[in-house]
Length: 147
Image (cartoon, rainbow, N blue to C red):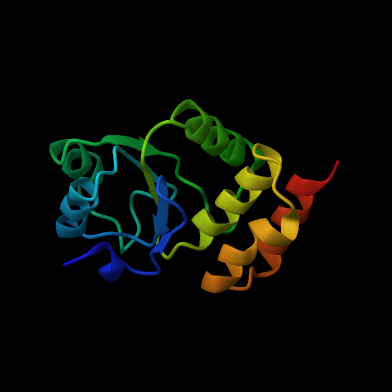
């Protein structure tokens, strides 16, 4: 089993990977790949969610951060919590996931634009590798990028 077996996984660089929901076995593989932090943007009670993801991540020796983002109502506060979590761990190897790497792909693009100064077109390349944001998420993106 490798990281490539995780749903919609994208290794963005040597420090950050994103994906859909990993299994407990895949969490062990994430740790073996050298990741130090897992950030989960999915809800904790979805059909896809693990019974005790926090426990599984900690047992594998990684830190766990849960920022549950409502699929139909992402908020600026959610994005700010995510950006702050990424900034606080900028020297760590981070694995970020949600249910299908849709929420995460948008949050990563917005983080790259708002905090790292990337240009929009470059930041959204990885989003389009996963999906085309629906009406809710397209509106959220525009709202977050308003001056």
